[in-house]
Length: 350
Image (spheres, rainbow, N blue to C red):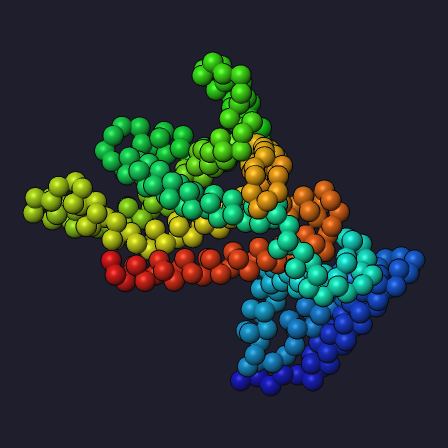
């Protein structure tokens, strides 16, 4: 085994020192708002120096680990910058009066206590849970039926799979405006009525569910198709030889054998429905009216994600919006963990 040379070790240490120094200097100049030019180039050079120092460090024992860390660093750094750091900062801002630019005072839990006295926010929580329950059932049911159709022996399976998946490729905002036109013009013309489904909170909520199923069922269908295709053919042949009817094969063989797939699809449907924003914004913008909590609300179809957006961006109450977002994160995390645990338990039972 080769002994690491002293010259290489000194060179790598110099690279590390220079990289750290350049990185710290450029960040310090940026924080201080100094007019020193080339801060961006210095920042990049500092990062390159650190990576080069780690790469050329002449250690035999841990060199592979260092290389793995270097290759993982861009992904981990991007994840930290876009997810971890904003989450931590958001939790901190939720206890202040942050206006999107600066923090003047710490307000403690005032934002959290205030949200539970706001009727519109409580209604958004209720209607979001209602939306999630309906869609978890309906999307998975429709997707599973489509998957059964697309794994049968009918002709043109490729066409059907592409046709059912196509709505998922359309952006939510565009999709919302398309269906807004359909509900306001096409459906009213067919039903010979002057009022659109979007004009009333109850029917508008049903309209959002219809659009969500139309958009998302094709994506979940592909996952169910993958699960159904993993069922061994000899098991199905044996059940047919034993005289099992199609419904018996479905409920006693196919569904139990794709239990992990059902868990995945249920989890994806739950998280996606909770985070529904773009279709809600484009289709109704949360408008509608409902009498609840002794108040007259004018945001009958405003779900949680849209409520948080309107609070922070439209009303410029960023700290209050952050507090709502933190609560939203806690709710989504708890419900997702609970759903996965229940689904895993059902897998074992099946």
